[in-house]
Amino acid sequence: MLSAEEWTILGTSLSIAGRAILFSLPLAIAAAWVLGRSNLPGKSLLDAIVHLPIVLPPVLVGFLLLMIFGRRGAIGAWLDETFGITLAFTAEGAALATAVMTFPLLVRSIRLAFEMADPGLLEAAAVLRAGPWDRFLSVALPLAGPAILAGAVTAFAAGLGEFGAVIAFASNVPGETQTLPLAIWSAMQQPDGEALAYRLGAISFTVAIIGLAAAELLQRWARRRHAG
Image 1 (cartoon, rainbow, N blue to C red):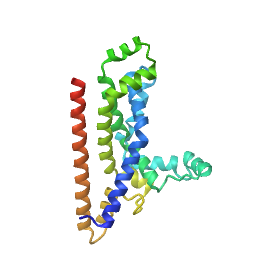
Image 2: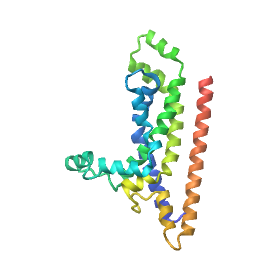
Image 3: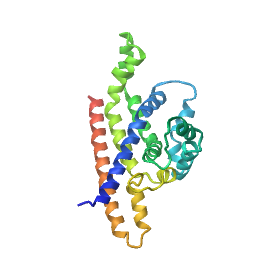
Image 4: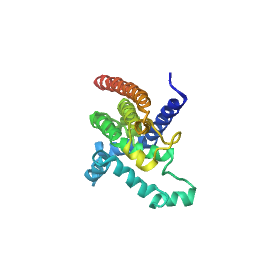
């Protein structure tokens, strides 16, 4: 049975990872469509930018977010002065950092689905005088739906384990930004925190396995649907 503290940590983790996916999913779909189906100039540069969080140290990503969205950052100062919105050291900031780190996973999954879609279906829709938006919304997006769900679940599971970018941009505030990996790290710093670290690690492991299993089931469904 989980303690009140453990429920709080788990709830914070689920909330931050969930908001990260909701925030990044529309942008990921748009980026995946551009990279997978269009011939726009600069596509290689966009592809490199999308995948930067994979190759950069997560702490550096968090630091860059702090420089941009912190209270003295170019965008952060404007948000604070204009709308009173503060992202650094908040749950919203933790969700933003998680969204940035999981964004490449989302884009790769959705892009593959768009690339595997039968181009004849889009051509048939064009022959029937469907406009670009109609073809995207009525043909391409439904075909990619299972892959989008699978990618979202995988990114969600990955977001639950994000550490470096979150602690650099949102810190480790109990009840606000302290997710499972941050709580494990905090427990490891305590002389008598080994038992708590083990319990939190088991929770994190269980949630990750559930997420990966759900993603695998969705991917199998997508393959059967595509084959059909």
